Amino acid sequence: SVFSSQTLYRYVLDDLYEFPSLEAELKELQKLLRMQRRHTVDEYSPQRKNKALFHQLSLKENWQPVRAPPRENKEVLCRVYVTVDSYVSVRTHASVTVQELLAAVAERLEWVEEDMLLMALTYSREKVVLQPQQCVYSDALSAAGRLCVCRRDLTEIMSPVTDNGHQQPVRMLSMNTWDIAVALTNCDWSLFSNVQEKELVYFTLSRDSCAGHTVALELLLQRCNEVQQWVMTEVLLCPVLCKRVQLFKKFIKIAAHCKAQRNLNSFFAIIMGLNTAAVSRLSQTWEKVPGRFKKLFSELESLTDPSFNHKAYRDAFRKMKSPKIPFLPLLLKDITFIHEGNRTFLDNLLNFEKLHMIGDMVRTVRQCQTDHMGNLLAQKDSAEVRAYIDYLHIIDNQQTLFELSHRLEPKM
Image (cartoon, rainbow, N blue to C red; front, top):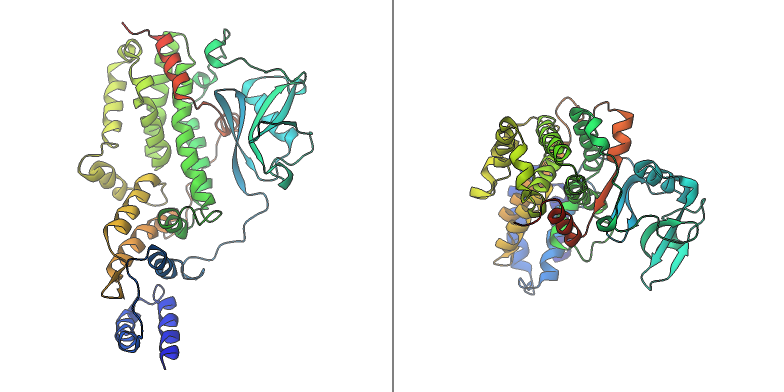
């Protein structure tokens, strides 16, 4: 019967990723179903297309390695605003309390924790003072649009960065560049190792309707953006020219170390941060950077060249042994290109060539996450540096960043 044929087809389909040799039998079943089909599939229906594609690429949970159930204390990147235009990104766990979050922010910005309160600013612009033992991610606080710190008298703890007369010491200058790269890589690896292949499919094909299915992937993308903004923030909050030059040298070396540690996520973020308009326009600073560092930066920058479909990056990444961390925005771009450039159905039959191409792309994640010996990418790091990298101070307002840039080096 048609029903039994369809059931058999589905069983073979579910086993296809584990047993590729079944593809020939699957094609025969397709022909049989085509003869028995009493209605035509609407190949132009996006909902039908994506439903079929999800069935092929999700296949319940049996097409990927068995993973441990998600921990209650899963990792999060929590934004705590310290001014209207800047925040501290705190790498922590989902059950973090208000007191723990305040301690992290106080440590990062060298403030007195006892003088601080954590406040939730809701989408309706209401301000709610949070109690020390409250869980930041509890259901009661789910309506909070933004978390921010203030003084106990509810005044702002810090004026906007563009009005701030005093400058924080550049702590990063006293830290070893290899240690900073290790801390960045360990953080990225912790996030990347939790990314599952199907998240790339959900994110690309049906992002709006798949809330909750792409959490690990979105965290890693968020981290990439925040590292880029952190690079800009560190440079543009440094008013002393000679120290800015030292920061440029530091970041160039850190980028080189990230590449050596096979962490292309932070590598791209740092290079892009140095290449943003607000930083690249600091000509007086760049002129003071020694020639060998400029040459190294030029070599590293060439790997981010988009020419010939990012050939330089693809060639270099292909030669790197696993485990390694790819630049995921480019991988997502490739999957989107395949999905939008190829029909899911051809003559009412599934386009297996398209599915194979997407499958090859998403399997990149698994191939990067471990080698044949089961080795991981994480390394032993410095506790001091880890604390610094886990709590990044970031300015997320482009206008503020440009204002700081022009204040450092006014336009001639």
